[in-house]
Length: 260
View 1 (cartoon, rainbow, N blue to C red):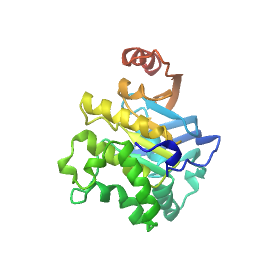
View 2: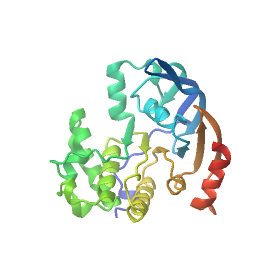
View 3: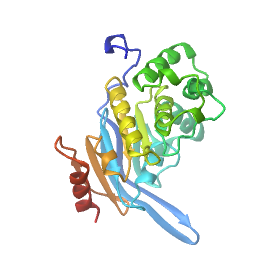
View 4: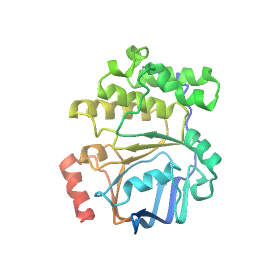
């Protein structure tokens, strides 16, 4: 593993908050019905913080993540992510923001099957038309920290599920985004691969002061965060700090006390 003083990973600019949500509302049409996914959600996430968003199905957690990724806009309220007001972004600005302002990791790995690990990771750089030299050096460090050095020339079908998800993490970080959004990233992994994934991510985050927002229903995944925010019916129902002595069972009990 590379020593921190030799790291080419650059930290995100220091700001007090990476995400500021003030009275955010979002509605969707379901047939003839208008469904409120978010109802005045208010939340702040500090730069460099690792926050898990939990809630039952329909609580609004995935909607919140999509808004933070500029995949949609709030109908009301104000949402600022990495210093940008999401509601004010035009289509071109939103595309640029998605490329440079956030990295996104989904439950599905979404790797290109015909490309090698290296080429999958470098794809966002090439799509953006950026200089590949500095990104290539960062890619090399990421694959080492994520324990993928021996796999860079392999295609996705030669990798385990845990390895594919670590490739997705490297791809999400190679543009040095100030914010990493993760939507149930270990949902398709068994317990062994999930544990290896979280260990590799923690090792990487030691070198990258990136804010992480994780949407999950899994207590073990939420256990990796510093803080858990619980959504219910489109609003923040409560939150708690993850303590050193917490385990998945204790965290699940704390979550349930707020979710119902």
